[in-house]
Length: 311
Image: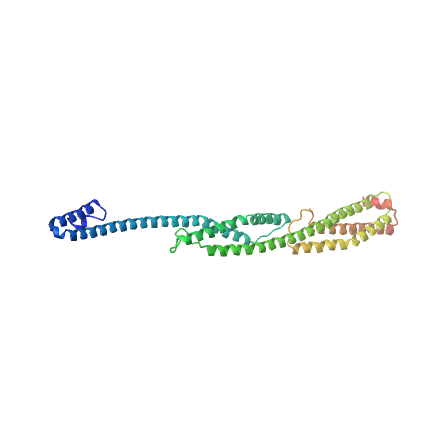
């Protein structure tokens, strides 16, 4: 029987061992029985030791397999938690560094609301980070070598990103606060311009009406009309500082890059037109009356005749 045909603990191996033992007992004389028995006992002990060693080796392999499966599962769980957390960190960092341009208080307040909601969820994500740290510590207890085949992320790199994120938060707070102050300043400028512009537009409309009334009144003589229009022209000239103040406010608005004003339907361009039309109307009407007076005086006619010539 070949030695290659049996393994330790197999039926073939056990039968071969007993065959050898029986052969020894048959072939030796009774005088050698003690020696044979001793040798047989020794061989039997060696065989039992071999069987025990094989059993222990199998148990050790099974334990190693179970341990490795446990480590593998722990590393997989780590990856499942660390990868999404890393994605959140990177997305949050991009949001905090995102440059914004606002044109109203409402737009800034909207960004502030989103930022406050983000800060409110920080404790939840901090707990996730702590859980990831604990998971790595548990892995380090049972795994003394090897890397995680499911992710390249490490707790230290996640910790660095987390700390950087915490530093960006107050910076974002300050940027939003500065933007809110700036937009409030712009809004006050809008309201100031609107108050002046609305008043100025109403005033020019009223003055235009006065010009029409100056020539439509049937009881007003040419001299009275001239006097009235002279006072009206002085009144218009007296309001030039208000017009110049509007121009200064408009320059401030342009410097602040303000494009819309919900408090006012008037633009500086339309107010310019109203101002020029008003000034020119008074001056033109006054000049027309002066010419009528010159015609009247030069030809020695009365005002009724002047009116007939005019018609």
